[in-house]
Length: 130
Image (cartoon, rainbow, N blue to C red):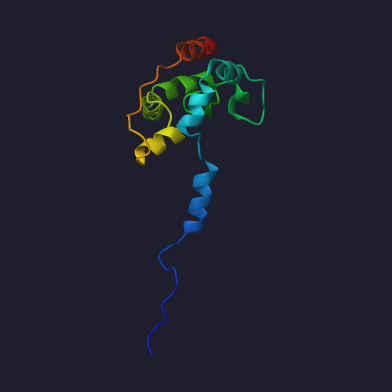
């Protein structure tokens, strides 16, 4: 008699990995597009002090939806590859149900347009750092 094959032998830690992925999940690009609208952006940039969040919720990157501990960390983040990638992702318009239907053959497909960034967002971020 041979050895019994163990079920799911090569899946070590898979359950825990899935939990950790969803724990640190950031906002999707379409959610960030909603945050970039002027009324919501000003509310996010001028948040009340919340001691549970990093930096008491005073140093926030709208594009990446991340809080930072101080203005120096926020400035360093603006230079990072991750922030630049997120800016590049935000240049295209967000994915919609109409686009999904067009891609599936219900109508003529048109590629997504480029969206202009809200200029005052980066200006207010720079002003807040000083």
